[in-house]
Image (cartoon, rainbow, N blue to C red; front, top):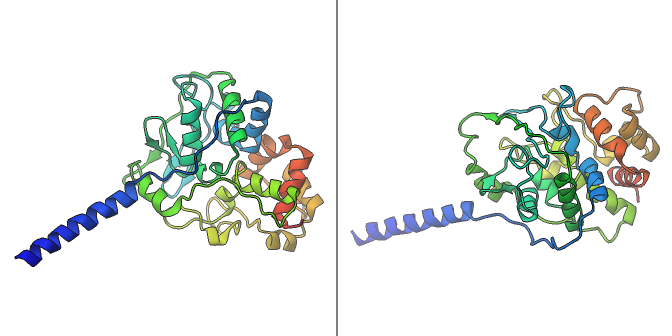
Length: 293
């Protein structure tokens, strides 16, 4: 009887320990948010971070940052929300700390877990200054009193609390750390690609739980998958005939070395993000993707 009691106690303890492990908050390093934000710089971050392509219904002529078209996934359709300064329909009521928490740790005000369709696993790598600049620019955007539709996802994926367990397994919040063996140009490209531009969100394959397979970084989605995103690792890009010049041309002009069109989602990224980048940042991105220092 005593052994059975001790066994049951052990099971309860293990159960509580397991629950505590999975539901303990997964937060990255503390940020320094006591910085002066700049709207001009922040508007540039809006472009480097791809905010417009996702959060604006370009096809339907929707208002700037007032909500985008559904992101169709095996788990359901995720609707990019209104991120204008409107206090009800948008994020105008968010504090800088709340905004940073959402971007860095995937938790919005009210302790609401965000789904990884929002690339907080990339945005967590952004610098403190970029985070503050982005916030002040969004707060300076024109308010649009049009609330985006809710996500269309079924059970059990509609249980947001399950995202805490997902984060415990797959989310590793951290800030970008430069590689001291590489040049400043290469590191700037690495920061952009893996941080604000979140290239891996599309071009890195995901497991059955929707988490990026980090050992297949930039290896693209499987052929025939919908949507399909090609590999953009250095070896594949060079095999396809890219050098720094042709890669920048493709990223801004929309044609690959074989003169095939880079359309679909990539076309929006080109039009609404990459064509707004500085020549220096485009060169940095090319240097990183081609791994040429």
